[in-house]
Image 1 (cartoon, one colour):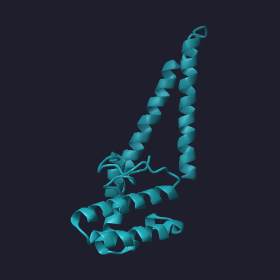
Image 2 (tube, helix red, strand yellow):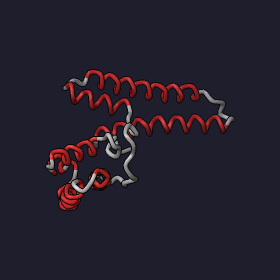
Image 3 (cartoon, rainbow, N blue to C red):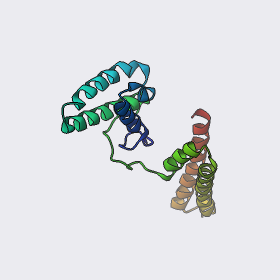
Image 4 (cartoon, rainbow, N blue to C red):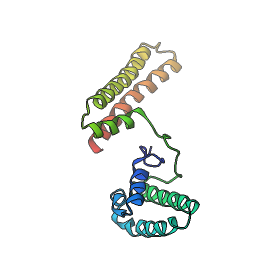
Length: 167
């Protein structure tokens, strides 16, 4: 998941739009690692020149700049570039809520949503394990179903903790 970084209304494209509007590359450079800065600067300068030719040229040049910015951003994060997605392609409630939290400087709704989602998911997996726990020992299919559910539950919790610890 690219967390909204590869869509036309994502953070990277918004920063690239602002860079073009203000004719200042520094609005987008923080999203790109230094080693790719020269490539983006070159594309930015060429885009600015081409934009003056016509409306169609500007539209095409802008899109090329957006694609380059997103591709380089994802490359820096080790994520393959698969093209720009339409606006709201990755619009998930948590992304909207995170944006709102940043704008309002208040995380209450976001934290409630996250905690509720995690709690609901953990309980659901736990209940699945408990519902399969008392299988008939001679019913190997039910036993396998229980073991799969149990291992899924343990694995999910371990991955959740690992992600929180490692980021």
